[in-house]
Image (cartoon, rainbow, N blue to C red; front, side):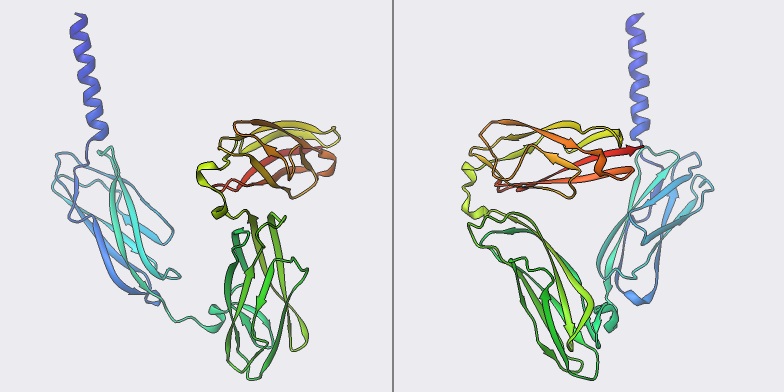
Length: 361
């Protein structure tokens, strides 16, 4: 009797599994379509995927999910009868999306456990851009910039990092230019044309350079200001970079490896009149040489750590780090603070920790 019951349960389970992984009886003539080359300014393009119900029961299309807002699917929710045909119309909008595209559409039906995949692809030929679109940032006297921000990410000591931004004079007159750091950082080099003729285009070359062996580590922000024809401009270029060790100077088979055992420290609800709250996290050196703390960065003084630049963590050591929150220095409401720890780990020189709290009255 028990054996008979076991067999019945096994059969039901297998039938359930078959149902879960069963394929829909809606069969598409084709599951992929290429639009080929289309013009960005040509407007939306459409393709209808045709499907037939080869089963014995009506099938409804429950949902069609696209991967981005540029792709929209249209379909009828009325069930498709056996041996009848249905369509899913997929529309792609090429506006502001030059280059190759490859989009996927997931179709969920009433009798299929797994979503069926449809794909559209093609290449969007970029439309001609106006001067204002190509150079959206106005500097003054007809002078325009193509960009006003650049993040250098990691800047290794002894390895200059460079970016080039285009600038154009859209006026009918010759323009004099002066670019300079608002507050000299000591790491920025600037090269730019001091004059541009009518409708002439030039380049601003910006270099972040830190000498090998320097004591400077961590985030370095810079602001580039302009004078145009002797007058100060409201325009500026914002720069940021994180100075780290030169990884080529560190032997990979004898290197530190940092691991922070928490990604976030949550203090929860904190009364503003309370004394300091204390929590901890652990930082571990899983490498084969001493881990050196190069910089510890906190945006505001509301958070302090028992870890600082110059500290060292031995191979295999687990260092418990105390983290203090001072609610008296914080406005009411939610707090989200970021702590950056920069080390000599060549693979992951920076680790980020989030500190959150809700400051109450």
